[in-house]
Image 1: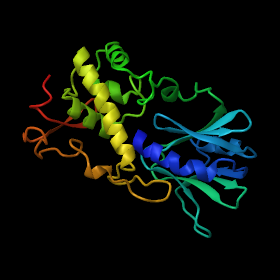
Image 2: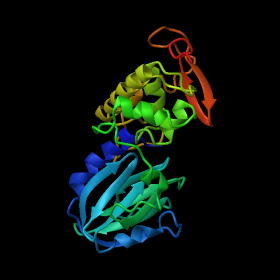
Image 3: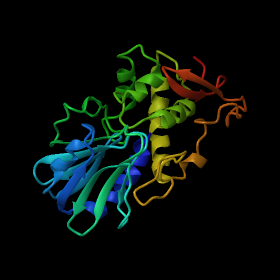
Amino acid sequence: MPELPEVETIRRQLAPRLAGRLILDARAHESAKFASAVAARGARIGEVQRRGKYLLFALDNDHELIVHLGMTGMLRIAEPGVTDQYVRAAWDLDDGAVLEYRDVRRFGRIAVVPRGSYASLPTLAAQGPEPFDDAFTPQQLWTALGTSTARVKTQLLSQRPVAGVGNIYADEALWRSRVHPASRHVTKPQAARLHEAVRHVLAQGIDNGGTTLRDYRNFEGGRGENQFALACYGRGDEPCLRCATPLRRTVIDARGTTFCGTCQRR
C-alpha cells in the first residue's frame, strides 16, 4: 500500500499538472467507494495537498476531492483510445486531458466532502500530526504511544501517533531506533530515537521517489528507488546491517514484520 513517501511523490507530480484545471465531466464505478467522484463535476481544482496517505484536491465550491490509493490504486492521464476495465473513476479536464483513477483490487477510496469535514473517513479524521510538522515531537510521540497497551508497530500503523507510516516505513523506523516492534511500552529515550527514525526513513523515501516492490507507480508511471535503500523491511534471514545477525520475520497483529532479534530487544 502506498505510504506517505509514495503519496507525497505523486502529489508533487500532480500539483503543477492539475492546479487550476476545471473538471468538465466525471464518471465513476457504481461502487459506493468510488461513486461520489462524479460530485466533483463542474468544480475547479485548486491546491493539491496530502494528509497522511490521502490526496486532497481543494475545489472552488468549498469541497474537497479526496483520494486514497489503497493497495493498487493509481492516478494517471488517460491514453487516447485505450479502455481499461480497472478504471474506477475519470475526470474530463478543460485542457482536453482525462484524469483516471485505476484500481485493480478496489481497496482504494474516493470521496467528495465539504472542506475539512472528514466524518465519513474516520481514519483520515483521527490521524495524528504530520511527521514533518512542529506538532510531531518526541514528547508528543511518547505520550501518544503511552495511551494504549497495543504493540508499538500496531500503534504506528493506526495513524494516531503520527500520520503516513505503513508497514514498510514502520519496520524501517523501528529497526533504525532499535525498538522491538512487539513492545507494548516505549521509554522516553526510545520515543526520541523513534521520532528521529520516522522522520529519517520517510524523508529518505521521498528523496528516493517512494518504494516500488510490486504495484506502486508514480503519476508519470515511473518506479520508486527506495527499495534499494531498505535496511530491514523484506530482508528476513539476511544479515542485519548493524550486527550481522540474521533478521527475523514474524507476524504481529496480522502484519508481516521484519526485525533484528539482537539490536531490537524487548
